[in-house]
Length: 324
Image (tube, rainbow, N blue to C red; front, side, top):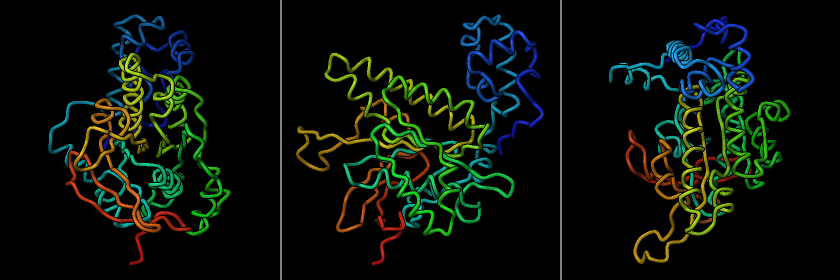
């Protein structure tokens, strides 16, 4: 498994980081070993650190986090021990290979009412469960969540219902969910940068962005803005992927769908975001409405999982398996 950063290590323990350099790093937002490891030497050079020093700082930070060349066998052993968050539905967990995985970005996309935000709410509660119950909390640390809301879909009432059904204290559960409303795409990207500091400080094990594309789609309409929109969206997705990888955190994004009038056979809808989004998430799941409270989940893309479909239900208590 990936090495944990020793608690005694601070940025001032890195080679070449004296008080002056430390101040430059902190003022620029590089307050943790993880933040420095996720940076490039060129980025650190822009804040006034000599390039040679920056290279040493980044190299040492990555060594502390065990970011290095590894054999395929080492990767196999690591992946065997990767923790996963239960969705509340065994069917959906099985489709995902055991639940929503840390160190991975998982995308749920579908039409309005298909269950995207419901899954995000449920995961924000479930991540706080003990390891043996499908959460990521340990005896000494409660796992917490960040919920970045771009469309006003977050409902504390839903969190309360889900927590009560699991026998958890709703107020404590809500205290462990850090909510923020992103007002535009620039703000959304700035929030992702701020998480470099918040994640290790608060033991954030789940980051939710619901939805990831809405601001980009609204702010850059038309073909004439497509290239700029895709470049900016691509940068944001790389931000989120870096958070997942460096901090051993699960990142869950939701996405809208749009109609494709040129499709006459098969599914006439596709996820917003184009090819940029097709290649960024590690796992992509399409959600569709079915009868009553049932929803269909289809595995669209995952390098280590087979394609398939399953049915889950949205109940008063949250995400569950259907009763029949």
